[in-house]
Length: 213
Image (cartoon, rainbow, N blue to C red):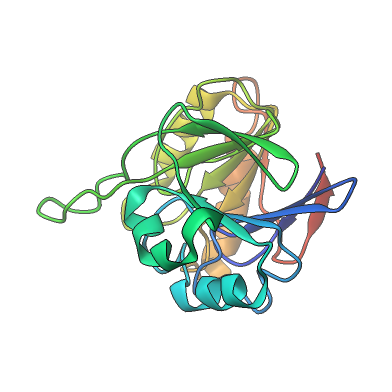
């Protein structure tokens, strides 16, 4: 499997045989995030994770493209019928040739008084876990964690504690579009400091970078 880091919280997964799956194509994902995708997974409804217009356009253009998410997202695309799948914690399904396990229920709290929305984490092929905007620990151990590093609901010590709780072999930073160049440098340094026994190797990939898993 190959993982490509796109903008912010979006990643693309490719595997032998032509399977291509995209997680969280949001407004900051960059152009053509959905190009060639056979499946789209969306953790939650916030626009930095779901560019609804882009997903709708992709579903319209490609009759073979399918979408999986929680009810707050799938309701927005109900007119696409059986190509849109509502999933929740504990569900297991196959998308574009990938085996996916669903973990988690809720988005991390942003501020008191702001309603907490549904958030759905995805473990793909028992190899990589995307938590969305949450500190959900996947139901099964996975070697690769996609680690949020900057958000209104997050501080870096919480990211470190979350990485330790998951205990991956490696982690790649996501949720980083709000960082300045200086912030990216600082977070990259801190990821190195956070790496070690219990957290694995934690690094940040530049958008467009592909790694083998």
